[in-house]
Length: 67
Image (cartoon, rainbow, N blue to C red):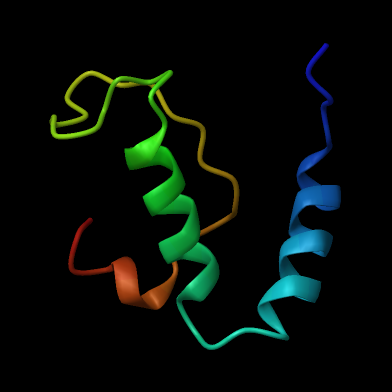
């Protein structure tokens, strides 16, 4: 069974971890993990049409160029 967490629980855990890491590290780890996950079949492919879940109220400032 996959454990589920509320958005507030995820935000609290991320805040605590981000406070101990250089800026952008957590996002880089998440992106690398997603791209390298063989179960998703994304290695070496574009993620066109992939469904993702985004948590948060607004985009981080460094994402504005991508929006």
